[in-house]
Length: 541
Ligand code: C2O
Ligand code: CU
Ligand code: CU
Image (cartoon, rainbow, N blue to C red; front, side, top):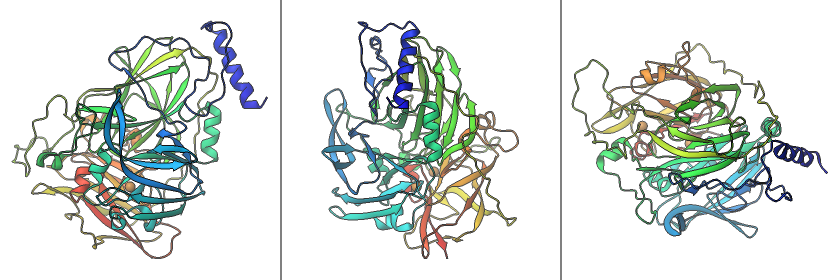
């Protein structure tokens, strides 16, 4: 018997020792890599009418099937029919991969740092398409910049060595003006990168993808009666961002997850077009602690225990939830707490001025900042879990930024068009040029009247140095000295900049590729991005 197997049997024995009771007295279970219980499952819990649907999990194939990143594959962008609700088939757009007899939809790619990734993208949609590997430090040929979008019927070859440290990255469409629509209609998936440090953590906490290490892709959508996503933004919604009236997790409406009394890892991705979440876990009427272990670009230096965190579009949060002390049947709800989404903020104390674009009248269902229950987690199996979270997760060296003046970046709007540094996207222009190898500090200011903007850089990860001028709801949970919240820590590729804020970030623009590289910076509110709140970024040799 191998060691790991013996350990699991010990865990299982522990479960029976707690007196949880094993139906029948004879049982067996096998080690499944995905989605299978750690112990013989106890009888099902009664259905919860508020959360009737089992959360969709990464498995062997199908939706979010896990694909080990070594094989050469073809990723087909195509319309699919998928039963989002019951047996009604919805029309979605998805990435489909056929591999070794399995069909994967929006596969979860999983690969080691430094391994080769070869994939052919085949766009069978009528519209142009291209895949962007969000967070990957690849060369511009492999970045999925809208320049490289291919017409319907055409293909594009990706070939790169995965340069990133372990982390939860993702991929999504990036054809100019259409990214928001394609993501909204279903195209988005995860790319999980692993390295030695990450594998050690998985061993230490006994984490298995799809079973106790669970990705949660949070996306709000408007669905019609058959579950078809309806993407039809009005002028106002193109300006503010398109919100859904319900929130799906892993494309599951009103999901529940039945768990064991142990520590779970959740890798949260905000895959929404525009909605920001203020995440928390509620037990009875109280908020319970959770532990943040990583952000966009992987593990933090050490775990941080908090009660809430904002997550804006494209950001990731890697967390642990400790359910060791929960009794069978106890439930915890993942919620988004209410907050002021500052839809078109004017500085306090100033007479309200006419906005350049009209404000919508947000109704209770579609308002950003509304309180939402996202998912219910219910403890079904009592087990013994003797692992402890390591005090140190990783070594993070702060980037040494030179004494030079920071580069100013402004976010604002004029006549209903969002801009970066007073500009909007023009394909052949590269308004931001940095020198390869430079370590630059950027000072990003979000100028009122404005709204929150998740600011994203392609091709590099950065560190957030400070946040100032923050609204009260952010200051309240921020570190007094730096102004940073937990979602700002570690390596980031997207940072939320609230109205009136100044956020300083530092980026090391070193890369190993030959010649000039053209990436981009943009707001990850997809309607803002598609509307041109996006600039080319050239890294010049
Ligand atoms: Cu998810 Cu251009 O980004
Ligand atoms: Cu990106
Ligand atoms: Cu924006």
